[in-house]
Image (tube, rainbow, N blue to C red; front, side):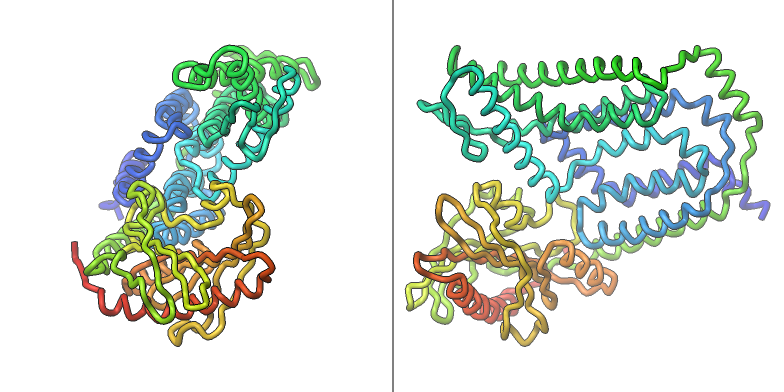
Length: 525
């Protein structure tokens, strides 16, 4: 055991764990950097590591005086994060992988080094979480909600100015022109950085936890109100001054002005909170230092060899699993997805080109889109997104219609799971997600699902779970997402449209299985 004494050295433990996490999550960290570098909504994340580094450096005396004592209940968090990491890294869930990277740092701090160290590093750990971009299934609906709220607030502000205005969704109609509140104007780019700033400000300016919580929670409604004010003022200036105020420099300047004004309101709220009981106590720096010194009279480090070795072992297992998965061959289509037949059974299709940039942003490697008509003059639209392997880092994974349709102006009236009978011998239960959507008086019935060679998933999380199991079994498989749409005609029931889609899906699946079998080639690239 004396030969292994170096394992007990804290610097060795920290360096070895940091290297292992960096090796495992290198593609994920690169993906985060690319995401925040190319997105105005998350560009603030580039300065977060420097803020965290300063906060840790500021706590250096506390850390040196704090007892290191493993916290064994933290093992629950370690095990959970190990399973979550398997799901994220092997299941190609980029959002889960990004979150699990941060959770490893949190769980290691708590489990291996104890509650006291965790308390000292609590604020830096929370701030570090702001590096992680919001998952797409949260980002898209949140952005949409913020746009609608901002548009509604802008309506009241414009009306107060005496300007006739009508708002439909995120479109502000001023009579002679229409202003669209796009994603960039949703206010999300102010919400997250303002919340991070509020956490830091509350940490330094308040000592009572509930007052800190008030400062932090107020940032969301404050950001929404201020962004609605910004959109309203821009619309007024557009009408009274010049259309240039909604473009370029003036548009960006208004955003900075709103952010600074929002922070100024936080300072004002903090001043009001300090006037309310319980009163803020004025601790001097010397007294703080004295209290901290008396709290940590002994710098005793308990033996944390076993927690460290257990954590290191789990990370090694995760690393080996990711390496084995990465070595699995890709299932490439010899002639590409666009060679999928336009004519099968009773269906004749017309190919619809897709912008390569849209394909890239959708998370697919290749995409196919076409509109099919049968002998009864029934029309169905088909979209297929294809990936030769799901086990790779990507900016995003497949997007579902629940994200894409609302952003295109379609309103989801109904959403449910639906089992299509008698589809294929390969799948016991062909269960898809069924949507009823409307836009400008028109209604569509939509089915979508995710599909590997032997599994059907009605949502992306179930799909990724199946991918994780495939990775653990080293049973490589392609992955696709399929969307089928049909317009509900006048005097036509939903059941009629449903019957039409059911028939198309049966014919499509039969053709798809033959297509993949004839096209599949293995690439060890």
